[in-house]
Image 1 (spheres, rainbow, N blue to C red):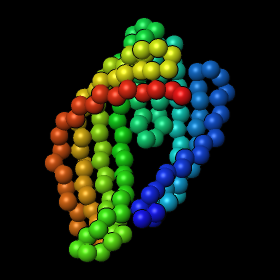
Image 2 (cartoon, helix red, strand yellow):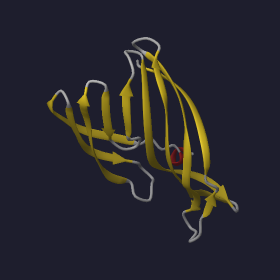
Image 3 (cartoon, rainbow, N blue to C red):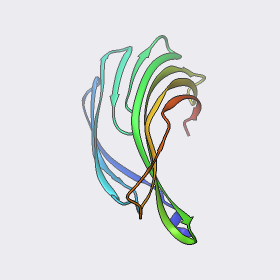
Length: 153
């Protein structure tokens, strides 16, 4: 069903008064969500060439560059996703999934276009909730591990 296919759109205005400070403001649009439009604000600050404070949603982080290829980071965030599912024979029922996390790890730039990272941390405030229900199902808090490969196109 095409209504179950949801593509979030984020539009930002970026202002960089100098090379150490970047302001970001904009709007996020998630069609079909209970709250489809919400503002996005943040800042990226580099107090030193090795330290970066990236305070932009969805995944704010503090990064310390060990050398040209290796960096340590700590990150956290809150995310909420919605899906259309079939429940009790009814199609198109909204299911919300929410989570919060905090952790840290190491990132390595393999070359100019590819990087890999490994991190671990703790997930909390996880729950599932149907749109037509007053209750929610809490998911047990716990540790997570993540291995990620990123490619810049």
